[in-house]
Length: 229
Image (cartoon, rainbow, N blue to C red; front, top):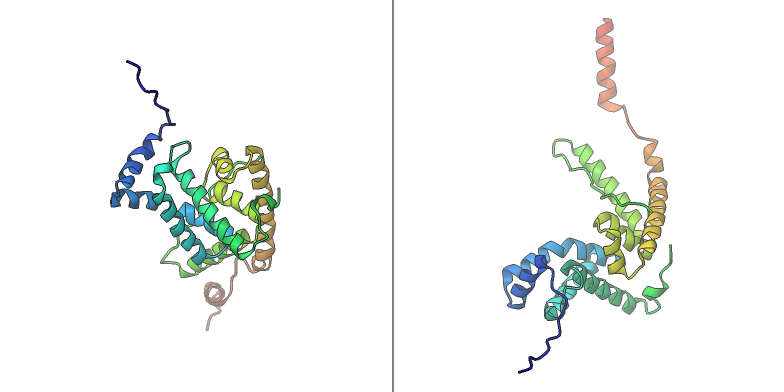
């Protein structure tokens, strides 16, 4: 008796398989786990395209709704995170095109350096001036990233901020690995130049020594010299 031939599908990665199966069964804990593991990445990718926090958050919600509705189509050719990232990017690009009909992904500007994760120092409750300075620096960097041309901005966000490797970035953005490296190098150069222009005037005021610090030191020296009144 002949057995029916079964078409084999690529196996779902073991790390994703259980979560996907549970999510297909409407398991709330699994769905929640998938979202919590990918929220930041999807938000950053969507925001990299739209440059608007509220719109990016809406896009991520739409992307999840689409993904979980069609989760049975996930075959494991790439990681679940990569699959979700593509959906979020398509949603964001769709929204962008609806606002600017002339914007096409293929028309974005074209542009080997290893990425490093940007880690902003933790704020210190004991040093409010330092915390404020850290927030100001972060604001300057975020604004400078927003001003990068879109094609370079997306590569920078995926490689540097999210820490994806070259191959995964190329897969998500539909680029050649060599293009990813070239655009990353160009993005870092543009970002550095932009940040330097923004903080140049601030640098001139670095290491201030005035006010109470200046007065305290002056009084201490006068006291040592025995000339205080």
